[in-house]
Length: 276
Ligand code: C2E
Ligand code: CA
Ligand code: CA
Ligand code: CA
Image 1: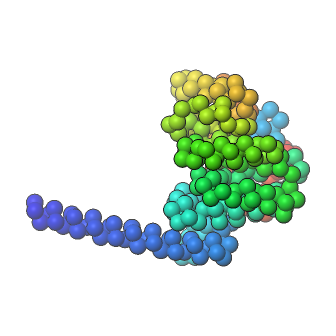
Image 2 (image 1 turned 180 degrees about the vertical axis):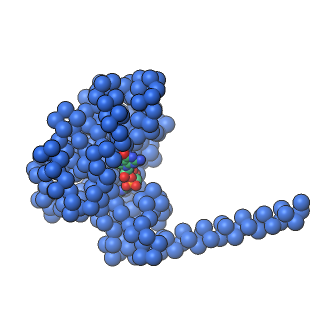
Image 3 (image 1 turned 120 degrees about the vertical axis):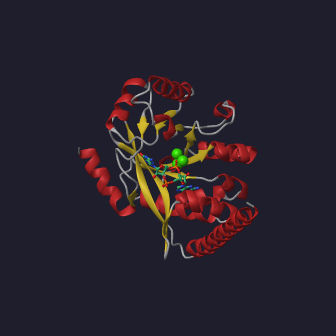
């Protein structure tokens, strides 16, 4: 048993080591990719359920590692945050996203994810406004998506920043709503224009009445506060039907409408979707 324990411990160590080395390599390669502007964007449309039209597209960052292939943002965004690289990524995403948006029909906006750390660095305003100016894009075509975590970790600076953005006419969306653990009091204190209900709330709505009730009530929180309510992760027609019948959800996003698209395919998608 003793030998086994030893052996086990050794294996565990070896594993940790590989893991550590792997992370170090990813970090190194990520900083290279950011320096070379080797990240790209995919865009996923947000659909208005009453008009059936695309209202905006969310920019989602993509990294294809030269030898390891596609690394998901859920892996490299936390690394970037650890390394202090996130504001460089946010800046890159803002510039590319606003530039793409300026080529789309004027009624279609673009949504960009802002990380908690971006509020700490303090130059998020400059990044946003420089991107808008360079792209020649009106402020009201930009939405910034923030999570509850960002608000908890950097409450003071986040509130100040978001109020300034809202005053400019930039949309502010609360992302992944319902997955945080904070109190709901900040919902009133902050100038959110949109509440994005996390897709975990949609998983059982077709089969489970209690899940439907929960969704309805979560959506009500948003509408009562005059926010636009969006459901994330709509994958099936059945889910869409439930959304229409049982909730006050106004907008939706998910694989049912479209996977995230390469930038060059967005304009075509909008044209075809709106013609259909
Ligand atoms: P998110 O902001 O909640 O983005 C939505 C994620 O859900 C995207 O994953 C999208 O591809 C995925 N998704 C969309 N529709 C469906 C669906 O119907 N079913 C399922 N199962 N998934 C769906 P992605 O692109 O892998 O991004 C993951 C997360 O990484 C994002 O979650 C966001 O938190 C972060 N992220 C992505 N791009 C950026 C960025 O530019 N900056 C920052 N700070 N974070 C980003
Ligand atoms: Ca988002
Ligand atoms: Ca989300
Ligand atoms: Ca998410």
